[in-house]
Image (tube, rainbow, N blue to C red):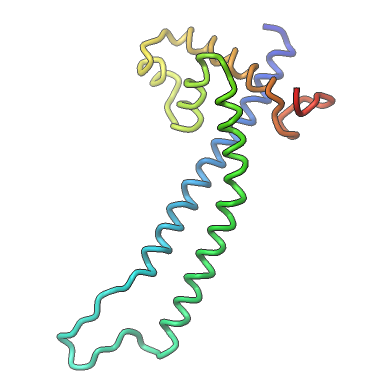
Amino acid sequence: MNEFDNLKRQYARDYLSHIKSQYDKYQRLQHSLAAVEYLGQPGGIRYDKPQVQTSPSPDAIPNAVIRQEEDFDLLSTLLNEVRPEIRDFEERMASLTTEGVVYLWLYYVKDLTWTEIAKTMNKDPKTIYNKRAETEIELYDTGLPFPYRLPNQPAEV
């Protein structure tokens, strides 16, 4: 493998690490959104008390609803910012032809180690490494976004 291929691989790995962080962010946002939705569901009222009171002040419930709507809108906006990048990555991965696509997906998206991937796929770790290298180069050649390509290289090939 020549120096140019090693540079391509490095840029592809940087891109994959960025995508991994975007996937993690996406998952956290989805969990936060689900939590906000859950908190908005009706709670129980204790009828065994002499006076039924749902909150200490009369404005507490409307204020809580407004806060919940604001949180929901913010989280939805953040999710919509991350989605296109994840979609672009998934399309890039789908366009690759090498067997190593599965290995990269398992490592960067599913958080498996290279050893776990080799065991799971019943492959020699050296084979996994070679396929990984081929796939990283092929991924780079799909025309990675601007910060993840060599200077003076076109974004789309």
